Amino acid sequence: MIYRDAQDWLDAPEKRVLLFGMSGLGKTWLANMLRAAGGWFHYSIDYRIGTRYMGELIADNAKRHAMAVPLLRELLMSDSIYIGSNITFENLAPLSTYLGKPGDPAKGGLPIDEYRLRQAQHREAEIGALLDTGHFIDRAQTLYGYPHFVCDSGGSICEVVDPSDPDDPVLTHLADRLLLVRIEETEVHKADLIERFDAAPKPMYYQPDFLTAAWESYLGETGQSETQVDPDAFIRWTYARALAHRQPLYAAMARWGVSVTADAAAQVSTPAAFDALIADALTARGG
Image (cartoon, rainbow, N blue to C red; front, side, top):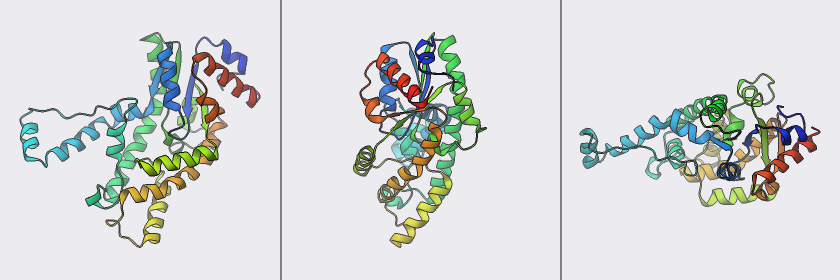
């Protein structure tokens, strides 16, 4: 790790961390707090995916729908209107909407082959955005003069790396430059995440093998054809399974860095408190 122990972290003139864990545990909230306090550059992986890597795909998809409306088609063809993605750190809806959900097209579902294609696009985009981290660390310092750097990773980071491989290209790139910090949930948090997801199911990325197994199991259990599947019902059914699938992956990733509990992270409201949180995690690890 780039910090030998708690004192090394506290004394470091340049603090660099990557936050990872399930979506909804406070990664973006912490990153926003650090940025707002000053001195910290906030690099959002999901924002980078939705702008640099998938921005054109997102905009083209919106244009494709607009072209089906005669008035909008006429305006687009004459360059009278502009359609673009207004993605922000807090509003990633353009990205999740493009990723979509498989199932009945009458309910907004995508054909499974198209869904798999978009999943593959997201995978490549996420890997690219993670490997851009070093560039943004340098950019934050040389261009903007920020001494500290926080990488706000997406919940699916564990799906695009192999933490059991000491030579994993993404994890080695990250661990050479930042301290990896897992925000770890409890069983209470898991239940809350499932409840929140059930109320407002959102598209997410899955490993290809996991998706294939989940899709085939769901079709087998329900007896439905691919075009009969309710898209929201499928991703609700899949969410708890995805949580369970990700736990050992997050745990293996944590061996590349440190872990903090979601409860402890939720109590942090200042950069000084964040520094103390990380110092305690390094001490608990034995560093």
